[in-house]
Image (cartoon, rainbow, N blue to C red):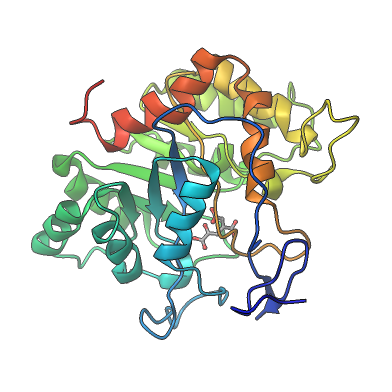
Amino acid sequence: MTSANNKPTSGDFTKTAGWMDWYAKPSKPTFTLPAGAVDAHCHVFGPGAEFPYAPERKYTPCDASKQQLYALRDHLGFSRNVVVQATCHGADNGAMVDALENSGGKARGVATVKRSVSDAELQAMHDAGVRGVRFNFVKRLVDFTPKEELLEIANRIKPLGWHVVIYFEAVDLPELWDFFTTLPTQVVVDHMGRPDVSLPVDGPQFALFEKFMREHPNVWSKVSCPERLSVAGPKALNGELAAYQDVVPFARRIVEQFPDRVLWGTDWPHPNLKDHMPDDGLLVDFIPHIATTPALQQKLLVDNPMRLYWPEEKA
Ligand code: 0GY
């Protein structure tokens, strides 16, 4: 069943090029977000007719426009967004920058750039609201880029006050450790470095990630994407335990150990999910299970993202 605008209605999905369409009618969260909350990880895709997808992309997403993103922001109760460049747009940041420029100052962004980017292009992106670059090491998403190129980019963006966002899988952290620890900026890890949550939270894999954060005070983590990491899935038990409950111990531990260096985002429109598309309202209801006090929620959703993305707006 589809609605008049050809989007799937709640609970009803269509598939586009092997990727599920996003959830058109998310529920209203029962958890009330603190005033000024930031969705610090989300994307815009196209529309492809206006902002074509990159020829080198590994997947073709469903269009997901800035208007649709900002409608979701208002529906869920967020005040601002951080729009992260996704691999399907390659290093053409046009759609993301267009979203920032049409946000009334309520969105900042993270770009993907090549070493050939000019200083003028970096400055134009800064003026539009870009505050970071993303280095992606997830092998199914990108082709290899030499580390010296990435380090050169990191050194070029540092004077702008930008940070580096890194996306990798937990099994690759040992090999990437030396590179990550030489980055000269603040470093933000996407989705806790994708731990295998079927392994013990006290096991060596997650211990290495905790060590990474503990020993490097410039490293932050997004405690986002339970729907990507979960094996248990979205089913809540007895209305007491959170959906995606197997992710809770991992995310809660990072929030409680590093309360001043964590961020949260919806990851809308959830690219590359093939079996289950989350209800974004349910994702917001996951938050109080991992940030269990109003003080932790305030840091996770407001104070931390504001310090990183809108530092000029001191509380
Ligand atoms: C995410 C996760 C994914 C995709 C991308 O840039 C991307 O294409 O990040 C993924 O497939 O795990 O954060 O959007």
